[in-house]
Image (cartoon, rainbow, N blue to C red):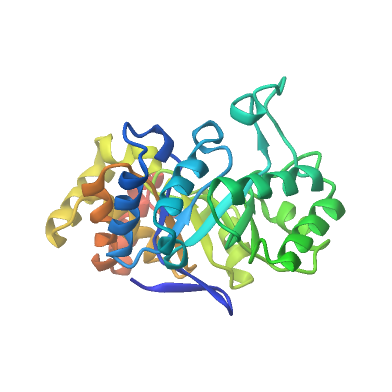
Length: 296
């Protein structure tokens, strides 16, 4: 499995295992979660994506139970997590309305909860989960800088930010924002043309892609795109999910797809995408059907 440099001291596996559904599994035991992690490690997938809000603020603790049971796993993985969304659930059940909170107080409290829940003394990458229209960039930036300085967080970034949101926060920071995790897939192609991807490429910054299978829609919809994906999958001896992920891997922007499933068999085949070969015309064939018309 290829790796992508995030900072000079930190690299991620090219494919990331997303744990947004880990708390929804029928089996959330430490042993079962450990089996998922081991299945990833066997393929060279070492990077795990979390968020405080996943599973109604339970998913981090599900991972933490596995790390407490087998502490040696912690040094074999890199942990990404996110903060900033407050929803009326779990520890924020008293919230009157879903909202964003990027104050220093909230970020620090979220990090402490994440460290405790995941049974770790450090977060490898902390992301601000959504752009906050009430963000005080000076306060948020200073809070992120202080967390990096403290060693509790090794690096920081954002998720779902537009270029102007990214630039605003970065302008108030000493630390470098190292990535933006955005929606990217054959079902969500706007970032390829709206400037989001170009902005990150201009800065030679790795891009994390959430929902690379379109929330599963790419596996279930019929039509020309599905037919082409099925043809390529048959030609290369993989499933259509591998083709969808390979389409992202083929792009020069150093995209890191974040793939989540609770099925151990599917987890074991995540890396199949890395052996799919797509030439330029095949890439554009998929893109053409994804956008519904030929390029201008």
